[in-house]
Length: 286
Image (tube, rainbow, N blue to C red):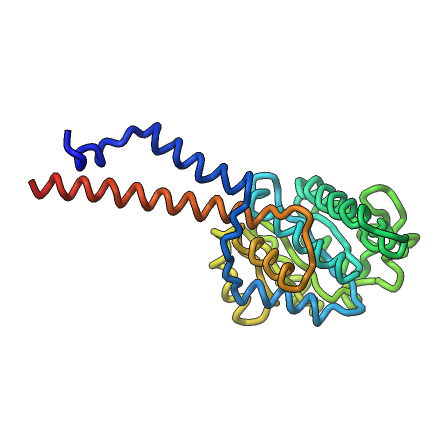
C-alpha cells in the first residue's frame, strides 16, 4: 500500500484520538491564542464604562443549561466588569431555568472578590452591591410593569427580602434609574426587551446571544436599538480580552480556553481534510 493510499484510509479512531487531544489539551493548559475583538463587543464594554456611571445596570439571565457553554462565560465576564466598576447590579430572569445560572454567577464572583477584599468597603455584599430578583411568569407583563415600578412587580427578591429594605435599591423606582439592561439569552428575549423596555421606556439594551443567533441582531446594532452585543463563545472571549486590556483580572477564565480548544480542533479537522484530499486526487490521477 502506497503512502497516498494510506492517506485515504486513516483509521477513524486515530482521527478521533487526535481531535480529542486537540480539544482537551488547551482546556487543561490554555494556549492564549489571540482573540480579535469585534466592534459589537467593544461597544458594549465602552457603554458600560462610560454611560452607566451613577446608575444601576440590570442583567436578565434569560438562558438555560442548553446554551450554558456559550452564554454562561458572558455572564461571568460581564458581572466581573460591573463589580470591578462598583456599579449597582440588578439581576432577574425571564426564563425560569435562568435562576440557577444567575445564582451560580453571582455567588462565584462575589466569593472571588471577597477572597481578596481587605475591608468591608472592598467586599461585594448582597443587598448593598447587587440583588437578584428571581423569576416571574408572563415576561411581557414583567418588562412593562418594571417600567412603572420595579417594586410593584418584585416586592421581594429571590430570597424573600423586601426590596425596599435593600440598600442597593435605594433611589431606584423604575427604568429611569437603570443605565442599561443586558439580556443574556438563547432565545428571542433581547427582541422583547428592545420592543417593550427600549421602545416604550427608552431603556438602553445590550445583548449576549449564541453564535447562531448573532447575525439576526445586526439590524438592531445598526439602528442603535442595541448598544452592543456578545455573540457566542467568541464574544465572551472578546470580553475577557477587553477586561485584560483594562487590568481587570479574572481568577479563572472560561471563554478563552474554550476558544483555544475550538480553534485547534478546527485546525486539526482542516489538516485531515487536506490530507484525505491529497491522497484521493493522487489516486484518481493514476
